[in-house]
Image (tube, rainbow, N blue to C red; front, top):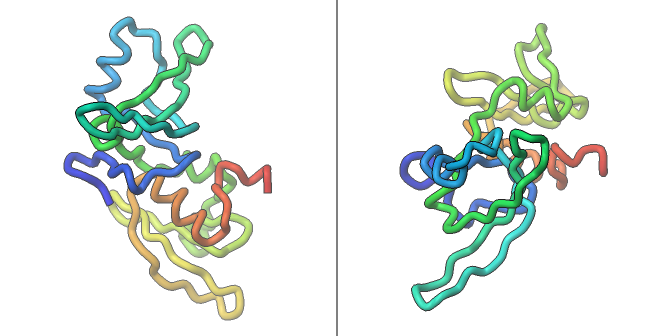
Amino acid sequence: MRSKNNKIKPQTLRLGLWVQMTQEAFDEANYAGMYSTREFRIEGFADGSSREGSTLICHYTIPTNDGYNGKIHSGAYDVDLEGIILTEEWLKKVGFHYNEECKYWIDGTWELVFLKDGSLWQVRGHSELDGSTWFLKKIRYVHEFQNIYYEINEFDPFDKDEN
């Protein structure tokens, strides 16, 4: 689902996904050194049609070093956006915890379990009936985690408090 160099294809994006600017795009946008991170959550989309063709535009907010949020508008997705590597810290942010006995990262529902597999994460389904798990897919990025979580639970893991 990714273009070359880990850049994200536009058709894989949706509202609420966590992504980041490529380093090149961030350096260009941050020429004055005012932004504190290149990671952000997608807030909206717009059509950037012109004579040259149609380009989708992504709206998002990036925190500034002085504590204020600056609005940034991105151009073509496959040019400036890439995935954020999924880490234990991201799983902790949405309530997952490490189960020492099973060697999995789980949340309270046990519908999905995550197992570190080198640089990737194995995503497995879990049966409460017999305790078995089965392989679903391997993922590397936060937005892939959000998408598979959404497919199973019908809401984004970063919006748990709203459901």
